[in-house]
Length: 168
Image (cartoon, rainbow, N blue to C red):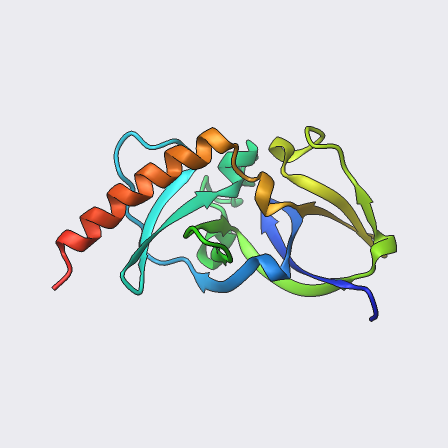
């Protein structure tokens, strides 16, 4: 499809979102995370990726979305399938989603720009319509404010120092 952009379709607390495929380096199953005390609620924790401490942001918490409960209790059934999107870029970052579902190619005419503050903490850049399906096209650059990014970078350096202490 000429002129189409690849998007990774993800589920965030029952909300269909799309992340530009070029912004994602890899998709991982949810590993064991460690969370330092005093971190913001959206910081799910850190994991070790080849000796590098990678911060994990929980998009559902960041966006203020509640996960639907399983019929039998408070734990969503889909939690078993949660994925990390390891983002491309100079600084380590992974986004926690409930499920990475599909890779789609979106033609330009299927995307409608959305104003910065309109939805999901201002992180949506486009509304994407594929047939009857509506997706929130996320902008990775808008996930964190500059102040939040600076704080996360400081916490990542501290996590990296902790990890280095245990390296053999």
